[in-house]
Structures are given as structure tokens and as C-alpha cells.
Length: 635
Ligand code: COA
Ligand code: AMP
Image 1: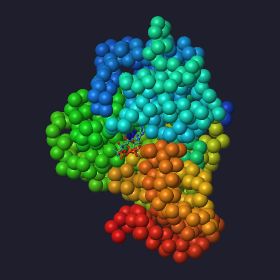
Image 2: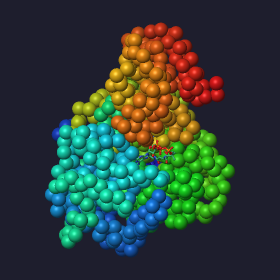
Image 3: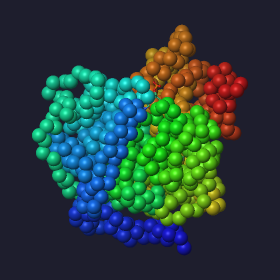
Image 4: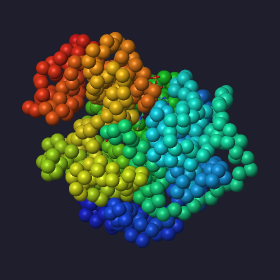
């Protein structure tokens, strides 16, 4: 039996023994009293009573083990033409000082801190500084507009917010401070203080008594040491899009997270201490949390923070320049980044300019990898390509080709096999397991392994309703798919109103809520349609209020503007089509899935419950005339 099979079987048949063994991978200040138990709300919890500190494990532990002079963090910023690196000892010093500043501003164990930052080292330091004090960080992706940030401020109720003067999108400066000011203006909860990391060549309006520059308040600060926390204490909250306008506050605890990520670094990625690990994501997303910050540092790797893009900073060779400059061993990115590179450099001429022989494996996640991109990457990079599937909720891979446990041949289009700890089941509407090869709802039989969300921030009823109630005893992932005869999982896409735009998870339900506030809109439906580079982009259908005279082009640009203002430019919302009616079932459910399939040129089925089939014909004509959707782009 392979290591994979042995580990997988044990993890499912006896999770207690399996994770007891894995808990020894990290240093505890006090050993857990139990491995899997229930909390007072009846939720599964791991490593009850264990005491640890995640920042200690990510920094001090390695220094004690003699890795103090090894590089912990490399920052490379083509947009500012700047590079910096920190050894474990240097990073610890920076984090201790940052924690000292937070402590001097009154932050202590259990307080929440929002971090709204571009990809600069201070973002990582702020996260680790919170972890050091036992404060709970909530990083908000810098591409979100003030409205989105305000929602998160009201939910997380931070005592303090850390931000920076600006982020840089290729050449464009995104001024974070005024965006944050606007968010605080919109939110009901007001933080006591805002700490600003000053970037060169700008000055911002600072609210007296509330806003402080980090470089002004850190003088003479006492470095703060780590505070032991309980395994169940939250390390962070990360908001992710659900089906409504209110994002879900995914909670990550300290103990389960540290054990799971430490285990994953070798089991899933095949990485060892000292390896150079680059997750080309953003600290605002779960991939950034798990594999820019915590995973590599818990494992004693060198991690890379890249303030740039796959293309245009300056060209399609950017990723390969990075691999060559830093001898990167593992690259983790989103398929959309590869599609952007492939579009500009289909023959891989840029790749040939660099020595990328240090690279061992390419990992992909965030959205489906189309086979064409998979084969292109495999051929041009000459390394195994591993597509692995996971979500903000799980925090680490549910399925992968676990490189540290075996190397079964991956299949293009598949996200491979369940990682030890994840009991994957495909169920039908009635909750029965479907035979191999049949599509259904992808679920995970409880308990979820360590590292996955124990609940939603201060909202266990919503956690239960969203994930656990549909099929009692199972966690509903929100994805549909099938397992083939050889045991490989194929993820076919979301079964709800969540879409993935350039690897960014967004809610079409939220977009509909925003559009419906437009004075001329009577009704709307938003769907995600296939896009060559971004995987999916949203498009809207609107029905205008009776008798309203409106220029459809003006309406389209107003809607695009409002989505940009309320959610952010990352939504990439451009097209809105005016239609007379929306296709619905007799019970009033809009046929969004049918619309998406029509736009994408996929076979579709018209439900027998459709209210009026002629509406679909009208909409097809509108899509044709707008040339919206893969099916109509050539028409
Ligand atoms: N802050 C502010 N604005 C941001 C932003 C950020 N962090 N990230 C993106 N935006 C803006 C962009 O400037 C752009 O604005 P514009 O419409 O004014 O030009 C808009 O959001 C869309 O940006 P993006 O999705 O990056 O599209 P693009 O066409 O500029 O670039 C890619 C396409 C594929 C190169 C880019 O999407 C990419 O690098 N994707 C990889 C994403 C990723 O790694 N995700 C991993 C999640 S695991
Ligand atoms: P996020 O929470 O932002 O990481 O998004 C999670 C969602 O992205 C999943 O529920 C899937 O719909 C999608 N996703 C992530 N990884 C993959 C993958 N490897 N293949 C297909 N879809 C993926």
C-alpha cells in the first residue's frame, strides 16, 4: 500500500489517531487534552486545551532550530523596482516591533484588527504581529471598494485598522487611505485608530486623534513577545462571497490551522524546510493567508511576496524572471495568470530566456484549469502540474495529487484525489451517494479535518444553514462535480450564485442586489459567463420599469460604474442587456443556469416547469445582437 493510501484510510477510519500523530509536527506550549471534541454549540473542534502561538511557530521556532540566518521572506516589487529580504531573525525583529506598536495602541488577545494593505512586507508583519498578541486579524483584499470594506468593518468590529498610503496596479496608484476613510464613513462601527504605513511621494489627509503613521508611533517601542493562546482561539477571520450581499466571515482557529498547514507543506506540496515557495496570489485571499504567509513560514521555507502581475510588469516573462532570480522550487498560481501569459507568449519565448531549473512543481487552484492551459504549462515549464481544489472555508486543499505522499499521474481537467482528512462524497438531491462517473453535489462527510472553518464569525446559525443543514452529517462545498472510475475528482463549477473572476470569488446575488437599486430597473439577473482569460466574467440582464424611457448604453455604463463603486474594479462587470422579461419557472425561479449554458454554448435543458419558453428565444436574440457569450461571439 502506498503512503497515500495508508494515510488516507487511517485519516478517515480513525481521525483521532491520525491527527494525534500529526499534532506532534508542531511545538505546543501545552499539549492538547483531546484531539477531536465538540464545543458548547455542538461544533467539531480540534486539539482542545492545547496552548500555542502561531507567530512563535512561524518565526521563533526556526530561530531556535538554527535557521535564524535563513531567508524567511523575499519581497520583489517590479512596480516600484524594489527588492528586500528578511532572514527569520530579521523578520522576527520586525514582527516583534509591529506587535509592540499594536500593544502600545491597546491591542490585546481577542481584539480584532482589519488589515487593508497592498502586497508589501508590512502586510505580512501586521498579520504575524496580530497572531503574536493573540489578536484576530481580518485582511481585506485591496481591490475591494469602500462599500465592501465597510460591510467587513461592521461585522468584524475592529479596534484598529492597518493600511498603507497606496497600492500599485501596474502603473496606477490606488490610494488606500481615502478608500478606507470612505469605508469608515459608511460603516456604523468606527475603529478607535488607523495605522498607516507611509509609502513614498504622497501625503494623505490624517484624522487627528484617529490616524497615525506607523513610522511615527514606532519610535522607542518595546518589542512584544508572543502570547500563548488556546487551540480554539481564532487566529483570523477571512470574509468570502456567499450567495447574498453579506459576505461570510470564515473563522480559522490557531491549533487546527497550524497542524493542518504544517502537514500540508510536505504531504500536499512535497516541500521541505529551506525550500523556496512562491504562492503568486495576494494576502487578501485565502491562498495568500495559507501559502504566502502561514504555511511556508510554519515549515521553515522561504516565502515570496510579489507586488506585480503575471504580465505587463513588465512582460509575460515576469514569473520566470522571479523563478530564476530566487531559485524558486514551488510555484502556486491561478490558471487565469497562466492564460494571461499564454495569450501574450503562446510559444513560451519569454520562458526560454530564464533558467527555471530550480522549479519542481507547479500548483494551480482558485478556478477550473482548462486542459489546454494545463498541457501548455506542462510542456513549457517541463515540471509536473498539479491542479488542486479548495476553498476559503477549508483553508487548505481538499483534493490534490499529494506530492509528498505519492505521485500518481494527474489527469488534465481533474483536481485529483482527496487529501488525507477529507472524506469526499458526491450526493444527489436526496442525499444519496451517486455512482462513480455521475455528477452531483460535492460534499465532505463530517468531521472536517483540522484547519477548516469551525464556524462563521459570531454566526453559527448561518454556518449551520449554509453548510450543514442540506445534508445532515455532511458539509456542502457549493461545488458540483463527479469522481471518475479511477477515483479522480472533476469539479464542474458552483451550484450557487458564486462566480470566479480571474481567481477572485464574487457573488452574483450581491451584484443583483446592487443593480436592483437602480431607479429604472424593475428586475435583474446576473450570471457568470466563460471568459478566455479570466475564466468567468459577470453579465447582467435587466427588465426596465414600465414606461421608463432609457438609453440602454447609458444604463449599461451606469450599472458598470455602480458595481465598480460598490464591489470594486475586480468584478470586471461590463455588459448589461435590456430584456423584456426574464426566463422563470412557474414558481418564479429565474433560470440562471440555463442562461449561462446558452451563453457558453453548452447543451442545455429547458425545464418542464418553465413559465414561457418564448422568453428564452427573445433572450438568445439579445445575446446574439450584443455578441455576449462564447456561443455568440462569432455571430
Ligand atoms: N487593488 C485595486 N485594484 C485592483 C486590484 C487591487 N489589488 N487588483 C485588481 N484591481 C483592478 C485592476 O486594476 C483592474 O482595474 P481596471 O478595470 O481599472 O483596469 C481590475 O481590478 C481588474 O483587474 P484584474 O482582474 O487584475 O484584470 P486585468 O485584466 O488587469 O489582469 C490578469 C488580468 C489575469 C493578469 C489578472 O487578473 C491576474 O493576475 N490574475 C491572477 C489573480 C490571482 O492570482 N488570483 C489568485 C487568487 S488564489
Ligand atoms: P475561494 O474560496 O475564493 O478559494 O474559492 C473557492 C471556489 O473556487 C471553489 O468552491 C471552487 O468553485 C473554485 N475552485 C477553487 N479551486 C478550484 C480548482 N482547482 N478547480 C475548480 N474550481 C476551483
